[in-house]
Amino acid sequence: MKYNRLGKSGLEVSALGLGTNAFGKRSDEPTSIRIVHSALDLGINFIDTANIYAGTESERIIGIALSGRRDEAVLATKAGLVMGQGPNARGSSRGHLMRELDNSLTRLRTDYVDLYQIHTFDPYTPLEETLRTLDDMVSSGKVRYIGASNYAAWELMKALGISDRSGFVRYCATQTSYSLADRTPEQELIPMCLDQGVGIIPYFPLAGGILSGKYGPGGEAPDGARSKTDPGFGRFLNERSIAFGQEVSGIAAAYGTTASALSLAWLMDRPAVSTVIVGSSRPEQVESNIQSVSLVLDAQVKQALDVASEPYRHGKPFANYRLT
Image (cartoon, one colour):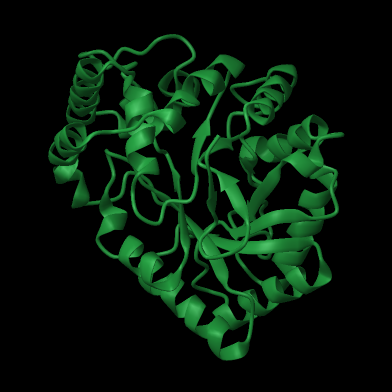
């Protein structure tokens, strides 16, 4: 396994991380536990979850899976999206975050998380309040490092400026949708992160499976595909995205590898990327994705991928989760 620094922090994370959105939803508890153990056995130490995944089931299952193996994992979770019906059941206020952190720690069966991330920018809470709360969490020992998710470049830069001015701990990483099918972060976010020493953690690195080659010309997917188990995912499938997935598959076949491995290896090679989180619903998928870590791309295939994906540098992000 290859390990990278998370931004300019001292924390080292595996180049390939494990996304756990499927736990308790597309993967039952025993299967999810086997996935975690398989990842750890292969040297994957970065495990990413959130309080809202599968209605808190993802965190609960991870807590069980890490029993006796907590020290092997760099455990990351998030808070800030909607957790209930009440007026204070969302956002990045001090009250909401402190309550959600304690709840997450209970479900995860641990007394600290390595990386605590704000799931999306909260336009209704002053950043000073959020950042002071996160600073207190680090001081308390319940959190080791902090990160952001779904922040625009200006929002993240404003947060870093406030932290620097106030002496608060800084965001060392940010999650964003980033893949061959979504290169919009290259416009503003990645240059800013390179300048400020913030690590990029791409989510949807395979565009929800579109870049895995599983979708045929008519958009038909095999059983278990996300488009079949998650009805809301259908909004990402269209003629253009499916055709692009097939184009990437063709480049991968000519290069002697799989579309998934090629797409992940391309991301790992991008500037500022610290770890790439990939969801798995079966242990075999973890074993298959690990091939991307040792895949070295030559100049010719890099150029082919860059040219093919150039249109995806512009337009709307593939995904962006915001409070409404």
